[in-house]
Image (tube, rainbow, N blue to C red; front, side):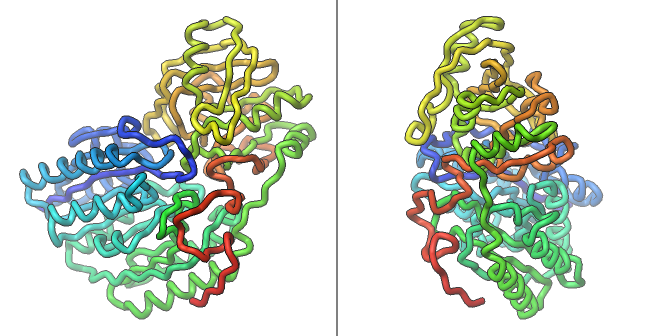
Length: 488
């Protein structure tokens, strides 16, 4: 019997969000709970488990999962506690069972207030416990891929899609790579080319944009006889750490020179098209005019306050503009505001009450907005995302101000798909404007019902206007913040 230990640590940090991600914000599962939680979901762990289930000689040893909605940097004590818990769980499993191989499910773009590389630190602890056994890790293509991580992982398997729809397939790819290592069928040569490039915009949509062409080069490598893994790891542009950049990653069975040549070719492709990887934004006023002239739903992408990218979620910039406009169509806007939820719950369903909305988590950017609202509905906040995983926003209230419905939550959620709205009685198809806090991840859920999409140019800690953000730690020069000369 071959014993395969696995664990998960996931969070994406936005350094410019002043509201920290504390220990209690991480949803945890332990041991057998992991198997039960992820079975049948559209996740990396589910894909990994399903492949391993085809090999009866493989025994899974689940340890611990800790996953949080994206957010601000993790305080030092909280991060120490979190990594300590994960390490203790792995130590306990290794003491009870001889570990033959390891799978780590990581996001890869975490950052602590005093630790730039939490994933690397965790991997060091794992290696100290299990020793030199085969170890693979799946990562989000927005991961900050550090030198320390690369030294500790045998094969890195990144997502291949943006918006991300291949989590399950990524888990399967990780499982197949780990099996090749276990079966002694692979001697991985993993190479990276570091590109001083931060990217945003619609050209990153892999189905239609230039970024997709680079990814298809990677998929061709993986499909070749000696290909193991390949990807273009673009990093999370809002995790302001020294190793933030774009990395081209190619892993072959032997053939290091071939892998390096291919990685350089892909790096050259990305660099030569760098001017395309800038977001084209439209003002909120112009976006409202688009909605006014559009028959059907217009989706407003508030990428500057994208909770999926680590923003606070308490921006009211678009809400203010809608209130001040003469737009009369039904609108749906999400906001994170614990105080407003408490006031609405105290008032009760059907009550009319004056509340302030927004600006509680990132007050340096957003000023609270006072509105007279009707409390339409109150929920306990439990629901299920499209991928089958549970979501919880604390208590949730639906408030109505004239033609605008506001979904207000106590704690941050992924405002990406339709389920976060429809589970709380708001069907996005019933509105003329729906605001999502996501740069592009919403598209798989809205392309079929949206008549128009506007990337709205407003302030926020995850603004696609990268030059508007106060970078301090990223290695300079880097495009598009600076003029850069780069040769592959």
